[in-house]
Length: 169
Image (cartoon, rainbow, N blue to C red; front, top):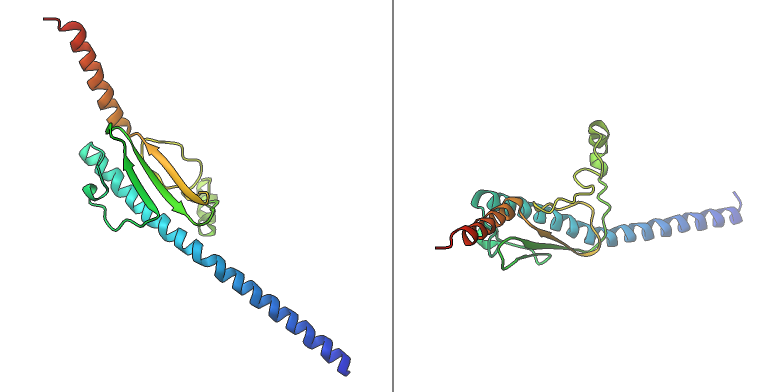
């Protein structure tokens, strides 16, 4: 090989090496927030399951997550019960946006014909707390109205209205 060809060859290798290092740095920079969001999602899902179980078992919305036996709440999760006792607001704060796509679930999704990248999709039920795998960057909040609590509340109001109407002693 001639000396000019060797120089071009070395320059090409150097360009590939620089590109590879830059790509590696970009991946590492993106991995931090994504890893934190995965941890936040997992913790929020565990909290949601525990909270749903508590409400189903006890028939009341707890004043705090601690009242439901849920501790070690990350700063990326917040819970606020409505003073009327019929609903609560649950928020999760994410560092990045997620489409909910999980390549690990693709084969199962194809076999079961499910949509939304695993357990994601368009979940609109607001009677149970559900942490969707699809989320926007920043705070993602849900207001939950447990259906049986609303039925109990409405039945009590209906009974009070009935008593006020027909019990005129």
